[in-house]
Amino acid sequence: MIRITASNGRSVTAKVVDECDSVNGCDAEHAGQPPCKNNIVDGSSTVWIALGSNQDLGNLGITWSMA
Image (tube, rainbow, N blue to C red; front, side, top):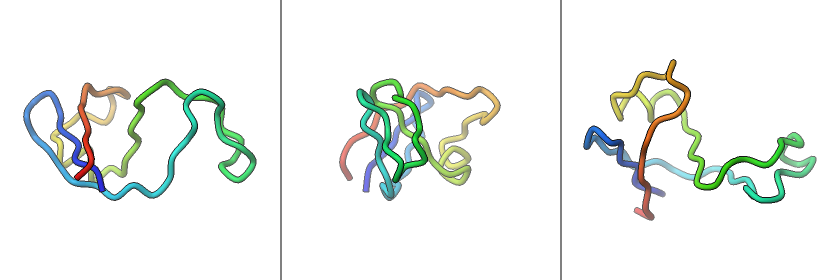
């Protein structure tokens, strides 16, 4: 579990279900996705709604820590 905090002060605890090696990208097991930027957190719409974010923005400034 991680605790995600948005710049507006709202926070939520979320379960980590997968991760991507941000330097090398993902392998076939992870649909061959290309490398991603460092410290990317992708979550369900429920997470972003709980944080009070506009999902149309695409990127949101957050911090995260182990819960």
